[in-house]
Image (tube, rainbow, N blue to C red; front, side, top):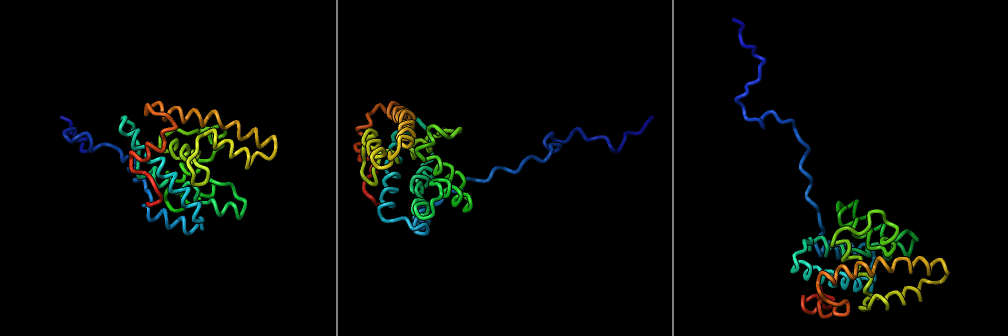
Length: 219
């Protein structure tokens, strides 16, 4: 009688013992703390007014996010708040060196190990609504983008008022006027998506901020 080969697998072993090594588990997303965000804003020399603007973007987006969460939406508040606070991280630097706003911020944040924050920050650019193939997909991206468009510096305004300001300040040529106006339908679409989910009007934004305790410039 032929002896059993020593090479035959022991089929009594648990199946998982034969599994091939899989991929390493994904690294946990790194998100800077509020204090780390403020330190980075100091490093990139944001002016007091730039900081006030960024804090208000964080407050607006946080208030809207809290309301959306109450409606059952899933939003990473830590990611949202850091991205909102850092959305203009490169503002002063790009005014000095002429680099493209948003992309420099993304590079800085990628180098520091915050790629998810960097992507949201880069996507806050007005042009994203018509020139970025990836578009605005997540609530974090949409809320940071939209909240920035409801401010002239650190004054809350409506979208019509915002576009009036943009055209007055940047619409110096027919081409620039056209590039600004092309973004408006996309921004209005995001506004409708947010407020239809909430069952509220965009005119109630400041009421929503008060209801959620997201007022003032304290962080």
